[in-house]
Structures are given as structure tokens and as C-alpha cells.
Image (tube, rainbow, N blue to C red; front, side, top):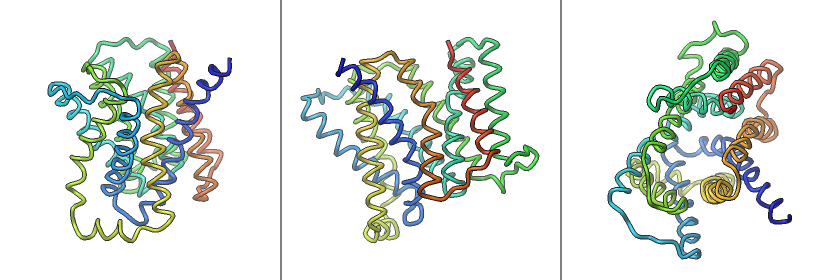
Length: 290
């Protein structure tokens, strides 16, 4: 019974870390570029996951065919993170949390388009409700207010939700022989190899050298807890629990982000924002309902 209760709390811990990640990223954006944030986050995650892999005596055997597939995932994942963090520069952490929650909508639409997955009336209604909430959120209560220049941050974050949908569909289409831990480790290594060359310049190196205490705490939180620990316990939870039950915890992530943004960043939480967010969550729930 104790073991079962322990497992139940694991996905919640991961969701709390992920929800708070936008606040840590927002702090970092005052000091370093999105490319540097991604690079540092990956480096610390790789160190932690390598230690875990060694302690658990994981198989480090490399399969070239698998690595080519992971390279494709890595390219999409890096692009996804870069767009998301760049968008966060121009919008609030709270808005980012709500908008990122629409990723399952894009997964459903892309699954219908490319994997011939079914969309029933309930799922279609959920998509409509979620996008209604999204338009209200970005337009601050009035969808007619939306423009690229005024809402560039929100729209970039929305596009990052789409790219996560692309990542998820590619992940579904390919098969890998690696364990979840080794897949994530190799994914992070290849992502690092893609993004780190963009940080080999004097400005990026100087920004890291002069990173503040808050900056180092933020990057360690992102790398060790959000990328390292969270991915490991999420994979473990999926192995020990039903995937639908684990996935349900993700509905809590936007609320963690909004609450954290209110506490640490003084982000405004208006009734309009809450109503828009609730519409998004309701729509996503209907899309994922069996």
C-alpha cells in the first residue's frame, strides 16, 4: 500500500516541476539567450541521466538506425524549445502555461491527418472549446484584438505547442529498441550537439560566466529537476501506472504555472484569464476523453 501511494505522487512531482519551469526560464531570460538556456539545461540533464544510467547499469550499446531516428526527434525538440522560450520573452509565464496546455489538441489533429486516428463529435467539440478559450486568452477577452505584432509571444508559444504535436506524432511513428532512460539520454545528447554550436561565441560565454545566483539556481532547477528527475520519474510512472491516469496529471500543470507566476513574478490573474484557461482545460479534457 505504501509503495502504491508513493507511485501515485510521482507524476504530480514531475508536473509541479514542469509547471514551475516557465518561471525559472523567465528569470533566466533577463540574463542569457534562449539558446544558452537550452544548452545549459541539456548539459546538466545529461550529467544527471548519465549518472543514473551508470548506477542502474543500463546498456549503452549504440544502434545507428535508432540514433538516426532520435536525431530527427532531437531536431524537432530543439526547434520546439527555442520557439517556446523565445515566445516566453514576449508574453507572461501564466499565458505560456495555459497555451502550452493545448498541445494535445494538435496531437489529436495531426493524428487524425497522418495516422488516421478517429475524431468523434466529443473530440471535435473539445477542439472548438479549447480554441475558443485560446482566442479569448490571447485577445485578452476579445479575439478581434489579436495581431502578430501585439501578440507575438503568445503566437510563438502556440506554434511551439504545434511543434510538440509534431514531435509526439513522429515519436509514435518510429520504434526504438532503447530503454526509456537511454532514449531520453541519447535524445538530450543529440539535442545538445545541435544547439551548443550556436553558443560558441564571446557574448554567450560571458553571459554564463556572469550568471547571477538566481540564474544558477534557475538553470540547475531546469536541468536537474525539470529535465533530469522529471523525465525519469515520468517514465517510471508510465511503467507502473496506466498511461491515461499518468496523463491526467498534466491537467494540473497550467494551474501550477499560473500560481507560481503570481507568487514569483507578480503576473496578473484576472477573471478573464481564468475563464479562458478553464475553457482550454475543458477542451483538452474532452479531446483526451476515451
